[in-house]
Length: 95
Image (cartoon, rainbow, N blue to C red; front, top):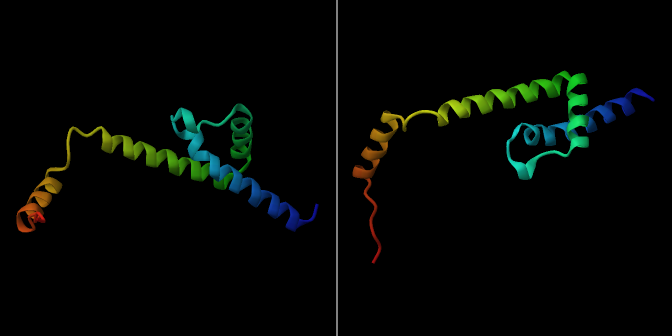
């Protein structure tokens, strides 16, 4: 195999993996990978630093979103700003 063929094959494999990384991390039963795709993805991640890094980025993002969702309520500063906007720019009903 020549170098261009190898680069194209790696690019193709990375594109394939990138399209499936999020599905593998999600808990959505409708978006789950079948066993063959999951094994292929795990094998690719074992060999590809770039795709492992992308997976880690998604995991950090998911953890951040979980922390935000776990908060007891909305940010008080945001609530005050929204209340201010509602007073300054009240919704005008149309006839």
